[in-house]
Image 1 (cartoon, rainbow, N blue to C red):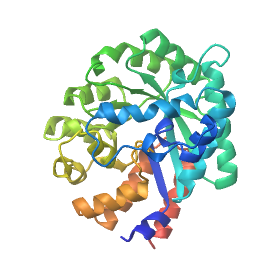
Image 2: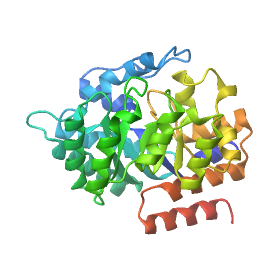
Image 3: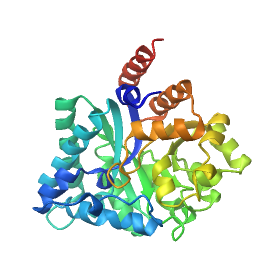
Image 4: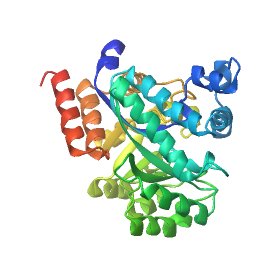
Length: 328
């Protein structure tokens, strides 16, 4: 499919980090100076996850006040709407912004306000995923989940776990997500991005509705079967995974394997600014690299609708738009 046609297609994205997706214009305005793109984006020859993560320092500095978080939400929706994004789940770590005088609840409320302002102006529906961080204490993460729970169904859709998977494996967080279940807070979990396939199994057994990345289950048929049997969504982020060296090269990326196994694969950006990408670019890349057919692109968009936390009315409307666009 031609790139411009991909851009015009109605889209859904489920794995996109706010801090890694803020525009150059927004960050320059917040910092009061002209920020060069090289400060925000990884180079083509990015050597490691560590180098990739260094690009988050400036954006996080721009998310420390009510006004900045609210305007970040608006900036985000304006940018994703430019590629006909109908619905997006944007994730962020409220604890990176909360401090004395700016509570976790206020952080979340500010983002929800900005996203809603963006919806009114640009039409893109959204929900927020709140990220617990692996390096933070269970007490801090649970307190954040409790704060977020009061917004469930009012803009917050679920929790998540992000951070250094190798240093803090999934087994360390079983109790945290047991508590999330008691709160009635659904969750997705980053697993198998750069850690072991066992992290994926444990995340699903804890009750994760979707797995972020999940590439470590490549070559593990029993875990692939578990993902398929449980209907667990798989949030794949090809360009980011190649940049962070989660796999050694494009030929090792399991996009084709997971699709052929019938998994509920979705295609996402991870970090739009850091990776210099869009969903349109991701789709173009996988079509050129892995021979993904137009009907498979459609299937992945429909998968994203199916495994999203959107209201049923929103899901029905987007599915109709996708089918109308495809002429069926």
